[in-house]
Length: 123
Image 1: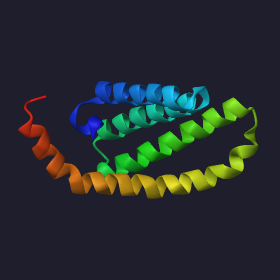
Image 2 (image 1 turned 135 degrees about the vertical axis):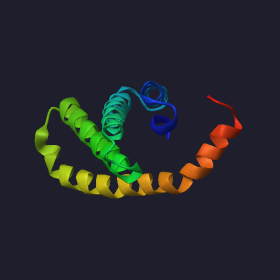
Image 3 (image 1 turned 60 degrees about the vertical axis):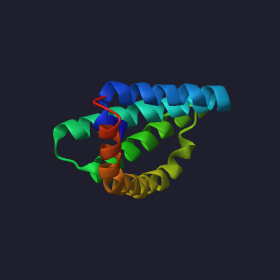
Image 4 (image 1 turned 180 degrees about the vertical axis):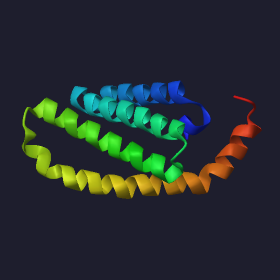
């Protein structure tokens, strides 16, 4: 929603702020995982959105794939072992499911969210 209605810079700021909250509540490892997933997914979704070839569901799937891949790479880097690669197919499959659900829910809620945004002014 943030990326669609507020813009890329705002969406990246939100991803970083969320990661800082994770740092405060869950520690450094969770922070790095959150930051990697948040930044990569936001940038990928911005590219997909800018291309004009993807709707809400396509952008949602792309974001989920980017998020899970970035977190996977961060986990490999943090643990120093590529043995967790066996988990990658599960992550990618779950990305398709979760990205579709997220995109579809935003599709359903978007009209109400836009009405709410207009009710609070031009920002």
